[in-house]
Amino acid sequence: MSDTHSPEDNPSTADEDWSDSALPRMRDEEGDGQVGPALEEELDTRRFRPTGPVAKVLYERIRTGGSFEGETLVRFSMKKKVFEGELRFDECELQRCVFTGCRFKEKVIFKNCLLERTTFRGAQFEKGVDFIRCEFRGPSVRFQSLRVGGAFRTRNCLFSDRTVFDQCVFEGLHDGWDSRARGWVDFSRCTWEDHLDLRSIQFEEGVVFRNSFIRKDCLLRGVNIQKKLTLEGTSLGGCFDLQKAKLHDFSYLQDLKLEPSANFRFWNSIPQALLIRPQQLAGRLASEAEEDHATAAEEYGILKNNFARLNWLDEEDWAYYRFKQASWRARRDRGEGGVLGSVGRFLEWLIFDKGCGYGTMPMRVLLSAVLVILFFAMVYCLPLITHGVPGYDSGEQVRASLKTYRLTGSSKVDAVATALIGSTSAFVSGFDALAKDVDGWLAVALTLEGLSGMLLLGLFIVSFSRKVIR
Image (cartoon, rainbow, N blue to C red; front, side):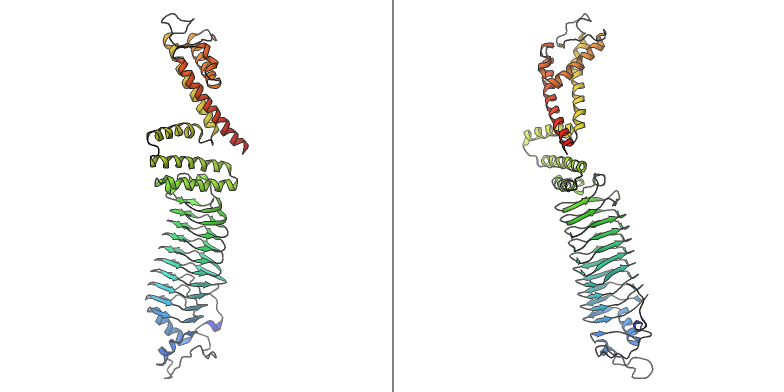
């Protein structure tokens, strides 16, 4: 909204002979250019458009602080003025008022007020400002170049039109609890040194943050956003809290810049399409940092379903894997099942987590298979290396061995080759493949390897098929 006013809006040039009886006309009873003794009585009139001496007296009254109740100010223009005292407006109407570049040294409170096309461009509120149950009317509600030293509160307020915060600096808490915005809300080039608290706000359109800095938490818990939520080039230093939020359209968070201390909360949120990457989320769930693994599992479940709706399959696998890990830790923390439960959780951790990433990592299954084959090959090779290879060496009789393959003529090399061939055969085909070639306690090792091979091959088929089919 422009600060340019027509001549009749300027207190220094406007004609004071108003025909509207609702507007008071101040009298110069002494003929000396001063307002007479009827001034205070006429200032009590509930609706007036201050001009000339009236504007000066009203400025003095506001400057020194005080309370205004049930009054209406129309086209009251003050620029670059300094207000010394605490101000309180109760059930007042401010229509087309201008406070450009003004400086308020004490707290300012608007309660149950209507502010229509009223601008505070470049104003400074050194002790903060409260708008409680107020209504802002446009066509565009603009807070431009504000600097607020204390708290900035807009609780239970109604923003009837598009609302813009541009180049504002909030040094204290920004509290917007339980408000309603009927138009788009745009935060551009703003800085919050303290928390940005927008909990339980009803956004009937969308919300956009552009090139802003949020040094601490951004609390959007319980918000209801009908259209998109966008954060472009915005830096976050605290918690991005979307708990219980209902996001009915796309939420664009890919360009959100995260400081090392930044984290997220998603518990009980309902995101329609949350565009955020695992690289932004890894290690940044606040519930995980607090070791609240049950809540972390629920949040990863929300992210998994979100990625599935977007058809981001790799991201869905990432969230599913961490959902299973968090669920495992939650069961461990509760101590479910006693000793048997602990054994079962250990096997789950070893086989399903480390072995195959709960079916999301088929290559990890292949790596596990190679490690199992090499381990059992070392077991099979041990007696051959220790006691000698039958047919090559003389010496102590080998008490446990596999049938030796003569491949190179070197006993040591053929011993290693025999162990690798036997281990691979047992892993792939099971104990029966080598039953006639085994002697001694190696039969137990072959049985264990055959069971391991059957399990890992099954896991590989399931996880690989899952990847290919999707």
